[in-house]
Length: 327
Image 1 (tube, rainbow, N blue to C red):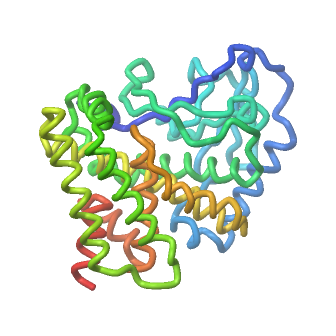
Image 2 (tube, rainbow, N blue to C red):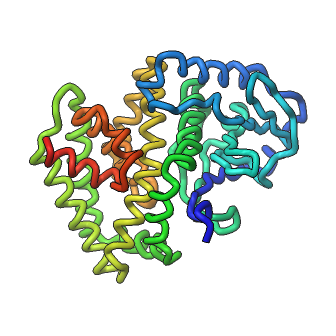
């Protein structure tokens, strides 16, 4: 089975059919300026986001109506869309990895994006992304560009790691069974405790996280996984692989969004990412947030953690556990 079969696509589906019929005019100046502003962060501020994460290294296809405008190497080329739907994704093609995003005006009309992990569009598992039902700011749009650029980077850096985790959740019913079991009051109470503890660990950003509190976080995390396994009848290793996979893929991408907000000096937007850690959510979205929170803790414990993550086989959670024990 090809490795890329396990590499996910973030499939953005239009919520209103009329959005597919928008004008065929050229790429709006607004989108060119936002792309250029995003690329300007590459000059001296990538260390704030993720070392080696260059949007300009990938063709960025911005979709407006029934056309895509591909920006790469200083040129803009118009073409037919590569996917049958409006998408927000890192898309591997024969000539490289493309970053696919809607134009900002289209993104504003969507209100939310639907995402999925799959080897194909047709088999995508669907869950909601956390853009509110309102127009997004320019800085939010740039943060989304960096989110997708992070996914493009993952395709080249972490293929073996992603493949190994994905093989551990080969059962397509794992996510559905987990989702059903989350309604259990006992598990919900444990989720709330876990969320509160992670938030309390992350938010005091000027201090080293307490090792005992981090260990308590992992104790609750393990208890939840064991209880999910028992009540849903799922192998505990499959649950762990599922959580590790989405924290790796989406947690790091959500973290990159938050760091982009800081690089743009948008404290209000960054604060929204921090506040999201305080909310108890269900489904796949919670692993976007827990993964982001773990990344934020690693920032304060070891400045070299991103290098270790890229070079080794550990998941985010395992890396945090190791760093805490070593420190």
